[in-house]
Image (tube, rainbow, N blue to C red; front, side, top):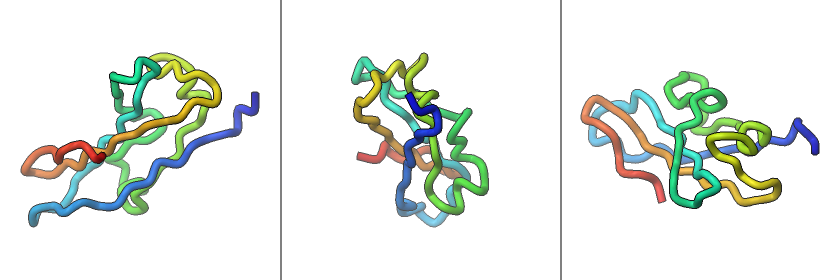
Amino acid sequence: MNSNISINVAWTAPFNGGSGITAYKILIRHSDNVTFTENKADCDGSEPSIMAVFSCTIPITSLLVAPYNLPWGSHVYAKIVAVNVVGQSVNSP
């Protein structure tokens, strides 16, 4: 297995309701196909560099182990939540 393989998660900024977005939560689906967990280690959506480009890169090796436990070659599903002073947005589709 090539440990240099990674996935790119990208999104478009949602309508912010007049209040600037202060962070994004990038949630990755587990192998149970139900649970989603934020991956702050590889994709911290409060980092200015990630917020500026609306994307981040996650190494496959992070997704093959707990808590995600994705089998090699499986699809990766992500949801994005925007955060501002009003609160959190609904999950992206």
